[in-house]
Amino acid sequence: MDIGVLGATGLIGRAVVAEGLRRGHAVTAVTRDAARVPADRGGATWRVADAGDPEGASRAVAGLDVVVNAIAPGGDIADQIAHADVLPATASALLKALERHPATRLVVVGGGGSLESAPGVRLLDDEEGFARVLTDVLHVPAEYRKVVLAHAEVLDLCRLSDRNWTYLSPSAGRIEPGERTGRYRSGGDQVLPYEEGAGDISTQDLAVALLDEIENPRHIQRRFTVGY
Image (cartoon, rainbow, N blue to C red; front, top):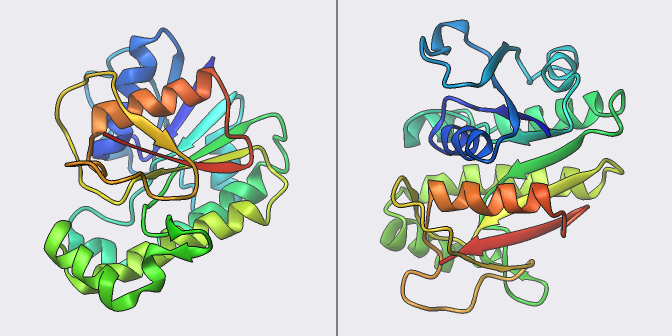
């Protein structure tokens, strides 16, 4: 399969590129900054394109069977908060570009705050409780809710689209580089039932779950969640 990865220089993007290559896929790593293309390309093809506008997004997805949007709005937490609007802007451009490439599937790596704690009740709708999760569990400032809301907006944009999309939500825990175990639990729109560390997952195992979904689609025009 020809798989493109937007945000290929980020933590999750790099893990997805590595997992795709590990499985023998043709992987096109996409970045908007040519200076970030590594000298050792590791078997991936690199493409420079800004997916934030429809023309750049169209160049980014051309010729691909699947495009993975793993773009983050910035590097550190403060940068992500300041540039959270990059997320819905990029999603809008990609969905528009895919009108020209209707056979290409879009898989979005999104956020966990829009998961439901009960049917119809999103985690982020409890502002005070969710702020405690951000500060006490995820150890980020309460202002990070702006990024969470931007991820939720991306999911809404997908749901309003007739494109061939899938949205992956980590289950409201930490996502950090670690071990590739090949093990994870999955669910739908609700946060996974609690077990110790249930929402956490390594970037490597998140990539495993994502490639499993690409190879065996089970969530077309749907969101799913994964965690340990």
